[in-house]
View (cartoon, each protein chain N blue to C red):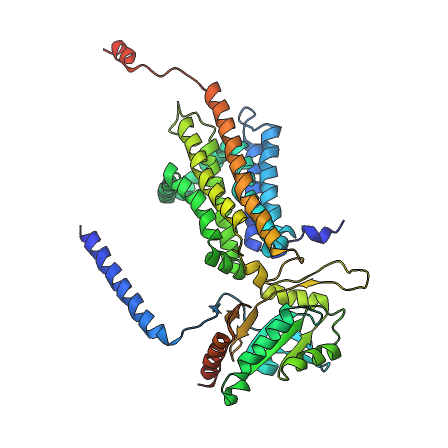
Length: 278
Length: 202
């Protein structure tokens, strides 16, 4: 086995630092948490698998192929925007987040408020859905895509924006807190969002698949990792934009329906409550 | 309310500034894709077809057109080379000497310096043929966000090479300025090159 494949193609100290911080932050919190709050082994595994997948597509040889093959680039975004964040959100890192919130909130003082406002604005359901599908369209808009693949800085902005937006969106969808007891989003609305983001992605993917011309000539301009037919590259890339994201939405909807059924409670009856309180 | 008027006013001023700078910039119209600031400056240490080791400084002050290929290339490279030759020869005679095409072979196994020299001179005698060992070429390609790859050789040892089809244009100072796609018409390439060569002189 060639170990060089595990080394980054485009070494990014900031990216490595960010991953190290998240991984060590998780472990430190895990050790400090009392037994009943600690996530179980399956959840820990899901979290690290998601983290490792995202790291692997950004800082191993995979990134080289993602820069010079359209379909591998689509695979990279599938992991950064869907699979990785889905695993992380499903692993329910809430106790870890709470732990760090307790540690950091007092030290941050007045800074907490603007961060919370920003977060709440981004997690407004329609803004979140618009951002999620909008970012896919933005980075796949041919002139923008060309620049992003040509400029190293823009390339990093693209990958990080996909990952961060993926985390925000899937956390909104898979927030483990019940909407009955907390202000988290209702199950119906979450399902609606998944449908809302799936449709435009399917349209875009189908458009790429059925396009007879070359939509993304940057791979022609910058050279491919190996001599593959441009039409095949575009076709597979289009399929990866079309089908797996739609399947992720379907799986997400099934998980949410399962949760909603388990969490089913009768509607609180207001007039009864009024009778009790004089 | 005050904030809103202030905001509206600054918007108007910003809009006017945009329009004004837009008018001033109108002289500089390029047919090719502008890549100012998107790619690093020209820098390389490669072997020339006469066997000398050369760096980018060797051609300082010249408008340099760098592109990648290999001499066994069936269609893309000959097409690019002949198109570029036509574009340069259509420039005013005194400006032609300010432009230097740099053909970088990414197939060092087959392209010896001699062979490379013969090949590029066949098209235009001012074209500089350059090559190096594979790791050096990989580094150069990575710097300009491009790559190349080799197919499996057939029974006669022939193989295809994938490489960038574009021409990277650097001005006299070595700044990355334009990216010529292979489908750009020859007369438009000439226009851009004339404009760049004039800028380099002034």
